Amino acid sequence: MNDIKTEQNFGSTFHTVDKTPEIIGKYEIIQEVGRGSMGTVYESYDPFADRKVAHPQFIGPDEDGKRFRKLFFNEARAAGVLDHPSILSLYDAGVDGEICFLVMEYVPGAQTLDAFSKPDKLLSVREVVGIIYKCAKGLDYGHRQGIIHRDIKPSNILFTNDRDIRLADFSIARINRSDQTSTQFDGFMGSPLYMSPEQINEWPISTNTDIFSLGTVMYELLTGTNPFKADSLAAILNKITNDKPTPLAEFRGDIPEGLEYILLRMLKKKNSKHYSSGLDLAADLALIFDDLEKIDSEDDLRDRFDSLSQLGFFKEFNDAEIWSLVRASNWDKYSPRKVVIKEGDSDNSFFIILQAK
Image 1: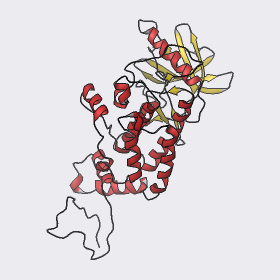
Image 2: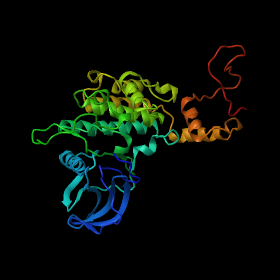
Image 3: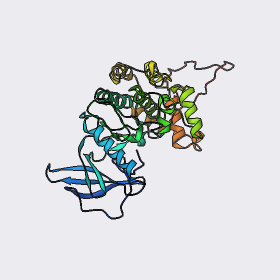
Image 4: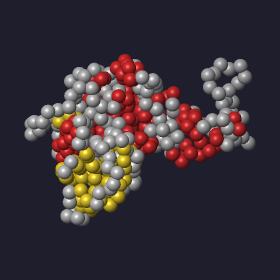
């Protein structure tokens, strides 16, 4: 998805226009809610259905127009066959002169998961598991309809005010349906940091591609860093194809063992070793919830952050560094006269006493 700075971010978009139109097709434009290098998204009103809608606009009059229009029609075909609570609904698609447009579900106040992929903005482990569970169910439904997304990443997943999710932007989706006969997009397609090994190597694409990409998203939501980040495209592609990601324990100490196993299985290099379906992944994630009852709440973590940030020792640390320390540390209470460590003992930890009586 293109980088549109907005509360709701979805849909492949094309060249922007300087003046907001009053109407596109039958839809009355209320206001612009997002704009990027290649397009504009409007909040609009559908007078026939009497509802607000999101209205991505597509204009492609130049040499790139044919490709952009193909993306537009591909998204319309893919999203048009999907009807699931975790997938952004497509209501309509049309052409008005040189303008191609989609009419989609409007989710006021929604943010993309990009907002929660930073070390100082991470959600609780329980909430991340819930998000990935819903994504897995949504993808499984799409896969059963013959749709492979191929571009799963944080900016293509909306997080709503009521803590729900919507999968968005099916512009480069692979459509494997007998009732769809249009030419498919093939080759090196997707967002490099979230591509699967088979996408990178241009091997045959299966539903496992989306599972791998979702694993990358989950890793980023849990750690605030992409597991394959590197200084060059070649280095990124090499990491995805060959390297194991850094263990989660190096970032935080509150990850259940079972969750680490699930994530590593999602990120297997051979797609035959991935989960066979989103439903299988969702079933394993559901089992993790019992373990998560033992995990500290977000309020507990915030209290610890406040405690550390007030210590002089950490005055040169930024918020992201302190959050990383909070999540990576073990926090314990000891009874009076309890020996924690003796002078001369060999240990690779360091201890901070926050309060003593």
